[in-house]
Image 1: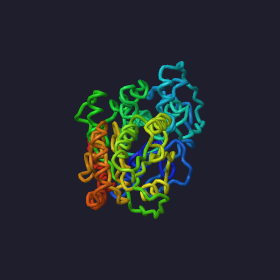
Image 2: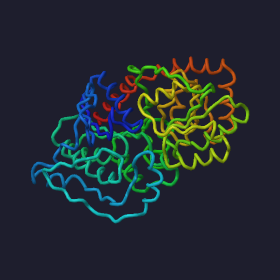
Image 3: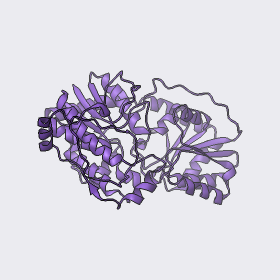
Image 4: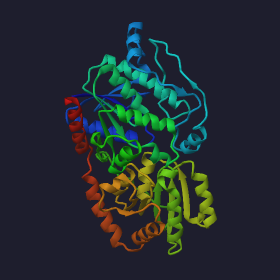
Length: 428
């Protein structure tokens, strides 16, 4: 079985969970004899190709001849893009800029010079919508030149590419919903991104969601037939995971929030819970690791509550810095308002850190030994934090059981289920 897979990022150059999930699934699929052509906008050349063959879209001509171009135009409708549109950029800027630009801009079609290559940034910058559209054109060229059995498109950035490849090749399309616009912005959805998401869902032969929580959003908010929406929970690859030794500079216990400081991640609830905990014990420090549009507001709220001497903002962390932060931590909290899955609690559990997660997260569906609270229930969240700090038996039990639990969540198992989904759509 051969899969033409479209993604936007791949390790070691990633901005979050999307690239990590793509990497884990491709490694798992390779163990089940699935051959993968992984297309990304801009490859650096240092990607791990042990389980995939990377195709750099920046090196693929749109079409080689006018005959190809004519066939292409007959099968693929060009997307119109809003020149001023900024639907998704760097995690630190996304919400603020997206909301500001939703209604701006004039529609324009970009011109295509056949036989030439587009140079993609592969980032989440201000030309993202144009890159998404050009990526779809290149996807059609790739589909016309390669042999494969099924197409797999990850997240909304690549749905248009998946559709273009399907129209050119006639092969079945599977799309993977790692997050929806409702997760990212609440009810203030960007209508263009929503339209692209729904377009991909309608065109797909199967829609894969990372949790039942996300599946329900796809069915109810996007009006997709439940029969073609299936949940495939994420996993974690810890084969190369190494514990990082870290010496603290403080004697107090440390409670950590790690993620984008945006509406979706619930940082404000973490701050309010921290304030309540600090009123009951002062032998604790709280750390907010990340960046986002709510960062300045969060800093102001911490100052207003008078807890700035016990609350630390680190900025965005990656790689070994993330592992080091877990090594410092006594408790990890993920208070997300809407989290399609959430890999960071699994990483914390692998580091022997007890976790508290919101019930509004996909990972809550697969974890039995994480403490779960509603994101809005700051009293329950504060009680859970206090209990883990105050009573040693509780974190010991939580960490021990959590380690066993997280070790059972393997990408190889998720990949086997995914291969079954491929087989199903290929036979139709």
